[in-house]
Structure formats: C-alpha cells, structure tokens
Image 1: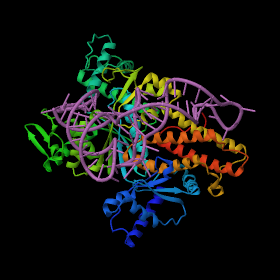
Image 2: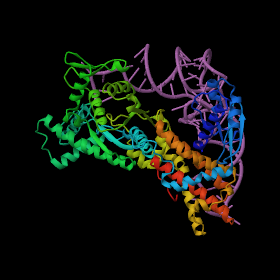
Image 3: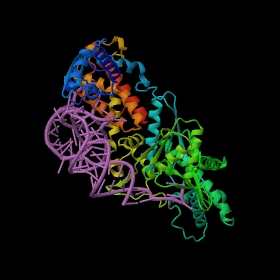
Image 4: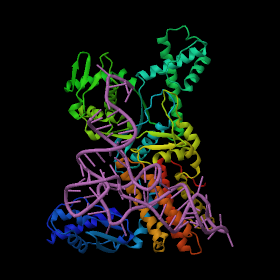
Length: 554
RNA sequence: GCGCCUGUAGCUCAGCUGGAUAGAGCAACGGACUUCUAAUCCGUGGGUCCUGUGUUCGAAUCACAGCAGGCGUACCA
C-alpha cells in the first residue's frame, strides 16, 4: 500500500510546483508509516515537514497544498487530514485494504519475496569453527543467524552461497592430534601426564579408543611427529563429520567447506603478499613483514610474516577473502563472534588495499551466548571440555524452539540462555504461539472443506464483508510483510521476523476467539476463509525463512 | 589508557535508520471451553528510555562528555 501512496504525493508536489504554489525543490526522502494511534488514520506521511526547510514554508501550509492537489485516481482513499505539526493522514476505504489480498493469494509461496538483489552473488560465511571439538551452544547462535541471513538474501533475489571456513593449517589442529595421541598412549597402558593445554573433553578419549580398536598399538613405537599427522587428520575428519551432522539436525546446510590449507597449496598467501608489496602496502623489519593497515584507518600496522618466517592467521585470512572475490561474489558477508570485533578494521584494510570497495564486505557480529543453569553462569571453553553442545540443546528443546530462541534477539545484544528455563518452558516457548496459529488456520481450512467450503478465488470474494476493524488490522499487517522482508534483508536483521510473526499471530488468535470464520452466512464465510488463508500463507512464508516448521496440526 | 558493543516496565527484550500520548513476552491477579484446536483469548497494574549538554519544527533514536557492564587491545586462531 505504501508503494501506491508514494507516487500520489510525488505527483501532487509536481502539480503544486507547476502552479507556482511551491518553489521548485527536489523532494527529500520522506516516510509513509502507519501511525501508532488509529485516530491518525491508516498511514501518515511527514512529507510536508521534511520539505519545510527546503522550500521555506510552514509545514502545515505545504501539507494543505499537497492535499489539495492529491489525485486519487484509483479511488482508494476515504479521506485525508492534516494534523499536528504537518502530518498528512490518510484514511483508506475498506475495500482498498481487502484488495491487497489479491497479491497474497496469487503469489502464494512467493508472497513476500522480491527481486531486490537481482541475482547479485553473495557469499555468507559463518560458523567456521575449527574441528577440534563439537559445536557448543554459542556456535548455534552464529549458525542460525547466518543461515537465516542467507535465507533472507535468497528471498530477496540474491544468489547466495553458504560457506564454512576451516583453519586446518594452524596450531589448534596439531594440538588436537597431540591430544588424541596422548589419550591413545594412555589407553594402551602408558603413564601420561596429560598437559593442560591439550583438549580435555571426553570425546578425545573416545577418538583414541576408536583408533586403538581399528589400528591396535602400531603407533606406540612410531615417531611422534609422524603419528601426530595421522591422529590430527583422523580426529579432524571425524569431528568435522560430527559437526556437519549436528548442523544438519539443526537445519543448517552449507554449500561449501573451505580449507585454509587450500590457500597454501595454491600459493595463495605468497601471491597475496606479493600483490600487497607491489602496491606498496608492505614494509620489512628483518624477516618480519608488516602490512600498513593504518593507511585504511586501523589503529596500528599488522604483521603478516612473523619473525619465524611463518605467515600469520591474518595473512591467510586476507588471502582467503581475495580467493572469495576471485570466485566472483559481489558481496561477502562474514558472521563473527563479537570477541573478534577488533579484527574488523584490519580486514577492511585488507580488502581495500586489494582494490575492493568497502561495501564488498559486511561483518555481522553475533554476541556470545551466556549459558546459565538456573541463573548461574556455566563456564564454557572447548579446551577445558566443559561445555553444553549444540546437539544437546537441540535434542532437549527441539530444533524449532532452539532456532526461534536464538533469532528473537538482535544478534548484537547479549543472549542469556538458561538451560533449565529453556527446558521447562519448552511448552510455552514463543515459537509454539506462532506455530499454533498456523495449525489452527489449517484446521479451519480442513473443517471448511468438510462443510463444502473451498477457499474461494479472489474474484469470488465479496471484500466488503471484511468490514471489521480487526480484519483491516490483519490485512494491514499482512500487507506489511514484503516490506519487512526487504528491510530485514537490507539490514541483515533476522530478529525482526519473530517480532512480526508474534504480532500477526496475536492478531489472528484474538480474531479467532472473537469471530467465527465458518457460519451459515455463505458469503461471509467465504470472505473470512479467504482472509484466513492469506494469514496462513504469510505465517508459512515467514516461518520458512526462519527455517522453522509450519505444522498443520499440533 | 585506547577501541567496539550494550544500558528502555520487577525479569528478558523490541522500537522499523528523527515523528504525534514509549511497546511485546514472561512473572502477578481476576475472568472465558456445548462452537472452526484453551499450546488460545479478555481484563487489571507497572517507566527519570543510565546521567548531562547540544543539533531542530520534533530526540529512546543523531553528536559530544560522563557513569555502569561486557568484549577486545598478540609476530594466538
């Protein structure tokens, strides 16, 4: 509806200027929003107020002129008012609202989707946890935020690729190999003083047992550095499989897994450094190579080749991003834990030094999850082996509940996840409220069929029968859905959808309790059935983007 | 010290890129199932939007300063 009103105001302004009522001036951006107060109409615009300073007139005078020259050719508007400091309030005719439902029914599964992205290639990289242990609950939040951002971009017409980056070339994997090897030797009778810097979780011993079962004691008398390679590979591969399985259960599937070692195999890091040097962003200090990230606003320069001749993680990460752009992504989105935020300026320096615009990269920070058990914090770290796994949480509270819980808060704010409460409240989890609404609608549609009412075609509905205020409110809310998806995708803010869903479900539940859809009045029944059918489509599409089920029965 | 994030109802959080009298869920209390699903609905209370100054027609929203909490400040990843 907003999209219909914008041109009306623009045309009116042109008319005013032509008549000389207002001086020529470009129209600044203005809003058309549903006001909080119903008495202020269905929509209100601040157009006159934002114009005031440009044309040097009083806002109310401008509003008067704009209203006088409004050409409502479509006959949508009941009346227009000027209010307060210069708001223009629109009151729409009842049928105008109902007519909006045509789109919903026609587009069905595609309602709310758009071609905003026009095939632009976007990569979303997320989770990217090293396979040194199972995913914990903190990874879960990043996983679901990344997944839904990818869904949002897909829904708005982008070509999206989901990627998981594995730092398989660093020390962590060696530590993993060593950890399993030590547990293996311990298992086979050696007396081991297990070091604190090794991974402590019980899964390490499980892997050691597997290897012992399969290969016996053959590694006991081999050279340790050789054995570690095998243990590292074995454990890494096995843990990665577990991670993939956990993600699958959580509803997250990646298009591509990228190994850091691939960069070295293709000499990517060396080539990158050469290019940076050629462009003059590198200086030497003995063996050490520094990258002048301060040229791009970083607070200090960063080392890319260490004193020992090894490239830093940062060097590999720039090479990785160069590799991404080499794969022709127009835009790359990284989902990072908020503890990496200090890393952002240097990453931007990296891509800008390579000639890519700042907008080619967007970093979404996901605040870490504070895990609580009955109100008291649970310390978590992969190394100490003390953590609650994502899998445990998903098994406990269910995939839909877990996903919805993570999505309900802005990713930039801290999230307290209390296990006991999550379990206890699993039955009054907000996700059920929305799902129940959908199931109820399906139930109405089933009953309708039994009574001989099929969902009518748009042309068969007498829209004037949808004359209740709560029906207008429902339609207004349904109509808002496409804008919601666009805004949510643009801002990369999945949390807006659960809030919207809650609003829509609440309106529906209330409507349901107050009014009967199916009655002896055939015309009325068909009109309401059509409305309910449209609510169902909207709920289903929104839940679909969240990766949450829309059950037909509960 | 410096940088980033956060500060809104008792609790958990929204507030759509500056709009009119600041919202939701939970928790508390009182009501509604002979009906298309009561996992629902209806009603009642609750606020120094951390503080201060500024920007303008207008500030929870923007700028600056301060206070409080979290995180970061590696030739770790």
